[in-house]
Image 1 (cartoon, rainbow, N blue to C red):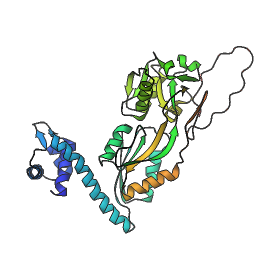
Image 2: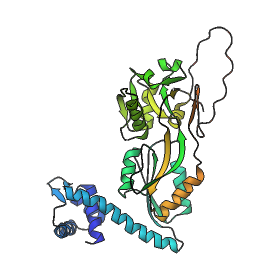
Image 3: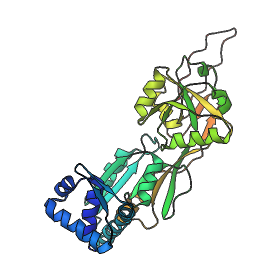
Image 4: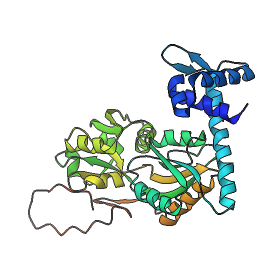
Length: 330
C-alpha cells in the first residue's frame, strides 16, 4: 500500500465521483481507476459501490477512510516537524470553527497567524461544534474552535478560552420582555428559534430541557446566526443563545437571564494530543490572547469580557411609567 493510493482513495471518497477526483488530483481517470483497483486487490475487498452516476463507500471503505485521514495527517505532520527543526514553519493548517463564538475573532487570529508564518497554508471550514470535534478526531482538522458540549474524544485535547452564560433572546414586544430573568419552566408554550442539532448552543439547550423533564421543540431551525437574529427580530419566536450572540442585536432585541441549572457555554480550542508544529503555534497564539473567566449573568444585564458591563439604570421616577424595551448591554 502506497501513500499515493491512499490519497487517490480519499479523493474519490470525498468527491463520490472518479472523474471529479481525477481532475482534482490532475491525473487521468484510467490511472486513478487502476490505482483504486490495485488497492482493493491488495486489501481483498471492494472499497466502493460503483454506479453510472456516483460511487459510494462500502463498509470496508468507510473504515479505511477514517484511517487514511489519520495516516495522511501523520505523514504531513512528520514533514512539518522536520521543517520546524530547521526553523521553518510550513505545511497546511486546517481550522474549523462554529459561527459567532464571540470570544474569538477568527479572521483577525488567522491574519495574525499568517503574517507570522507565511509558509503555512491555512484552510478554514465552519460547522456545528459536535461535527467539528468528530472531524478533528478523524484527523481531518488540526484545530477546532468550538463550544464544549461534552467530554473530549480519545486523542483530543480541549484548551479553554472563555466561558459565557446562555440567555434568552426575544423581540421587545414579546411577553418575555417584561421580565429580566426566567427559569426553563417559564418558557413552556413559546415558539423557539434554534440552531441545528450539532451546534453548541442547541446541544446545551436540549440537554438542559431534558434534564428538567421539559420539552424543547425548535420550530424554526437555522444554520446561521444572522437568520436566527432576523427571525427573533420579526417576533417569530424566542431563542436560547450565548451572550456574545445576543450582543449582536443589543439595541433591537431584549435579553432575559436564565436561572436554574443551566449549563455554561464554554469555548475551547480543540486539537490532537500530538498537534503539528503549525497547530501548536496557533494554539499558543490563541491561549496567549485569552484568559478564561467564569460566566456571570445578573437579573437585568449580561456581563462578559466581550459584551462589557451594563451601565446602572437611573432610578425610576415615582408613579407608574411605561416600561421601555430593555436592550442587550453593549
